[in-house]
Amino acid sequence: MAFYLGNHGNIRLRRGNPIEIGTFKALISPDDINTALNRLGVENAVDNLVTGDRIVFSTTDNRRLDFIPDTNFGDPEFIQTQGADQLVTQSGDSFFSNGLTTDDFTAFVNVNAVGGLRLFPTFADAINNDRSNEITLDPFTNEPIEVHLDVRDTQYNVLGNVSGYEFNTSRDAIDVTALSDKYKQQYDAGLLSGSGRIECSFDYTTTDTKEAPIIMLQTIQRLDVGCGFDLALYLTDQEIIPDVANVFYLTTAVTTSTGISVDAGGVVSCTIDFVTTGEIRLIIGRPDAYILKEDADRIQIEQSLDFLLQEVTD
Image 1 (tube, one colour):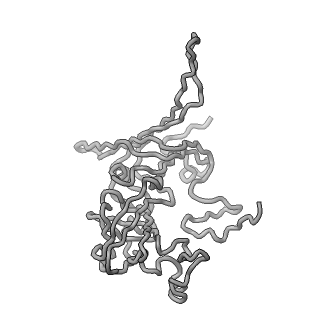
Image 2: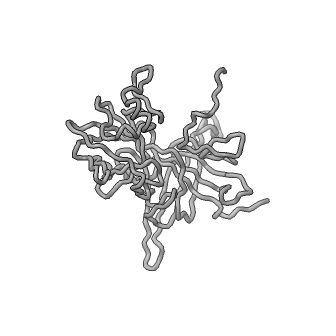
Image 3: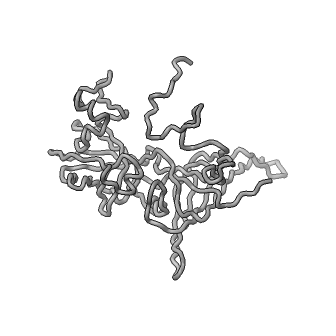
């Protein structure tokens, strides 16, 4: 029998919410665009967005997302040669190589203290505020543009400074006792639910691609888009112990409470309580962030999958 130490696991988070609740609206006016700092002012951004969030901007305005240069929607040279208006599908909608139209756009955001957004193509660029890779903004005129902002994510990131976690699952027992029965009977196909607690040392700095524990304290304060996230709780991680398989719980959850402990001469720590909101799966040996191929290579999440062969018949 093998025994495993608790420090052989970790926690990975993927930000985001169900589409029906993970959206809020904002009016973007010409005065909200600061081209010198490449900052976009968005109402209620402070209450809903966190640095590192992947946001999908969309609009039904005829002017489309006028503050985003067309070169950000596909191959700049191709668009410059053909013209953005010439790139159309059979349905008549504008189409670009990343699958988005000029009615919608996706980027990772860096949020300042007053809710100003700076847009970046990757998570690492956003959390490190790497201005060499920032997405430029264009000024526009006339009336404000109504924009929908959806919080979405594409990958799991390791939660840093975790000292321990607890996860419990329970199944409701349905009482099927009839009036004439002398013994209580239970039916075992009740609803399955989960809850847990994460304990970690407090840290508000984020480097590389790790999530800082402050993200859990910020998530519960999202007023309009909710506090949901996808959660992978690793018991064993192959990246830490190469000769064992990945064993982890995979579920969606919402933060229900957070606490901070500040002791004189001690490390500032925080606890996060959560409950699951969807399917709970215990997975053994299956990688969660890439697609398996016949060779040993991985397909990066942000990489185009157009080269994958598809079945042409059933």
